[in-house]
Length: 361
Image 1 (spheres, rainbow, N blue to C red):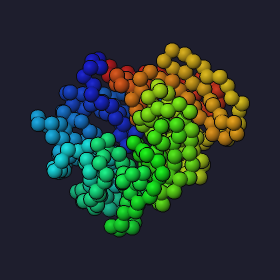
Image 2: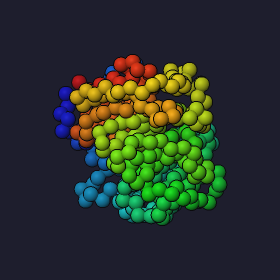
Image 3: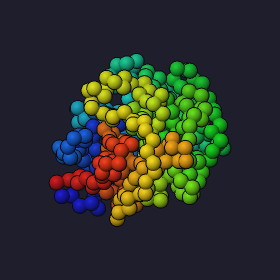
Image 4: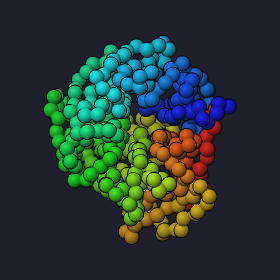
């Protein structure tokens, strides 16, 4: 077993087929199967990685060189086991976002959007710069890049409480919308029609349309102020999960009209045996089942409309993914947990199961 001190970061690929454990020796590839434990350990000799995003065989990554400049982005093709593209920027890369059609590079006060596919073709082409953005100071790398059918959307911070949204269908135009909240986080569904942001004190999460920035719904995390550290959607936009410094994970059911977005939901569910439909039934509230380092239960508001699952976990850092009824959370100590959320709306033990995943054998 490789010592936990050698692991520097853990990521899921965008298609959820791989887990990447980034170590000081390289990148460890592990397959992610909804019905099995993590398996098929492999290593790629790509060292000093600080940022990594992946989709299918394509890996976009940023290395920290000897000077610590972090200015060079490379694209690695896992079929050929080699780098196929490299670009150097004029300042430090803060964050990196990837989607099925390309990727976005976020710098301190600007961002670059690259397209890598034409139309509905599956093959990636040489990256082409399609848009350069000027943003407000963005030391945290706030931003989203997603694909809706054949359209690309980039969502980035602007001045004050505004966001700027770029829609590839609209050509060069960038529209600004006031979300009326001070925010430190933006998250979007890969194929969906919405993006999410928390309010300043972390008590609520707001859903906004990517097309016009309008707010369509909100979800209450709790009444005590705290910082929400990550927000993630599942692939089909049926659920939303948030992680907070309060050492709790909340999983919300989203409106059915948001489900599927730009993907063929029924076709993918038949082929991948993915998430079951949300159960629409009202059950009286119950007391949380508190246990050391874990626990869970269902809570409802007074109207019985917004049910959610609450799971307690020690020192969570961020939610990596929701996929095939499994919620994956990484802690500050780089321990990966898997939480079974299949029985959404049911009190069976399966809906509260918490299991630590061994990354190496």
